[in-house]
Image (cartoon, rainbow, N blue to C red):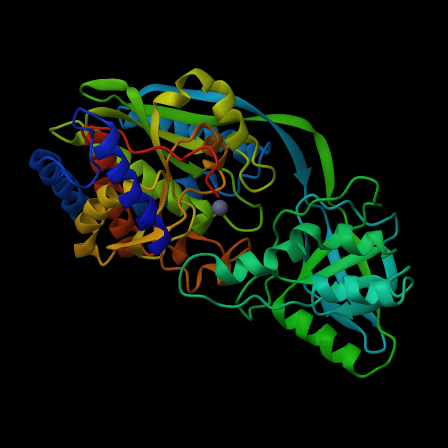
Length: 477
Ligand SMILES: [Zn+2]
């Protein structure tokens, strides 16, 4: 925050010296009272009506799991289009997005020696299958990717022909993605890194904070020129069991059978609908979430929750007696989990419109209550956003933190589009994330109503402000 203030003062001083006419001095001018009153009314109405959980319920119960390119995904796209029409959004459409398709098959694991035990595991998204008849090998444990590289440097054959077990714990944090952010590379890159040193398979401790006997899936990537080896995540208790067994010092052999595999490429879609602005409909404030989910649960906190929040915010804006100046556009993005193809397809399909995208919000942090607003924009946006934060303060969400947006809207950054998002409570988010336990009962309808209230107030203020938000400067970090 401190670092954001200095360029602001310098910028204002410079503007005062160089520019003859009054410039839109962000923050110097309060938002018009009609804007503030309408934003407050929408905020309060979101709390009173609280329908965000209803949209999440419909998506999870009526569609269920929806990995990109699956039949569930097609049903989700049809669901989104039908709901947008039901809510009276304009220009409702499904914009095609080519996606890679991957299917989970059988998945079993066991310690075969020295003490036979079943292991509860799940394939990582994108993993190749095990060879015909399964894969059996001795296991070597490392505590981190750093340890993997260090030991490979010391003894180049340490991992050759072995199943490498990467046993790194994910730390629980109260908000944001901090613990997950530091361990997720184990999942995304562990298989490629271990295979580069001769491993024949990879097991990871699930990237999650629970101790349930439920493994966490999630996307992984192979590297060019490195053999593709099968990779799976163990549930926390099974990772503990394997670690304790290895501590006995006896050779530990594990057998894996994974039937997961790539399918022919498929097509999904970004579902788009507009609530046209009253004076500048060509200027767009985008609200995004992702429509796809992993296959193990029904994708409730990830990301039916986020879709519930953004759909409810757009519904309330559409129902407002005073539409904002600008258009509010909802996008249910395709393929966030597996490849991010929806987020990349959107700016390609809307290249001509990007200069008129004044902000993009994303909701993909689960069902926790709002704590504040995260933002990435030109530094001069801060005083304006401080006014927005005041609208959110009665919800307990009055803080501003650096860093807004999310995976789906991040490709808009190159066009300078300011990226915003709710800062949400995430203490238990990674207990459930990407597991079979990600089901509707985990949704907290009251917290979700508060999230929608915070989002709709912020969105309205941005969509109705006299001038658009300062854009992300070209060379921003
Ligand atoms: Zn997500």
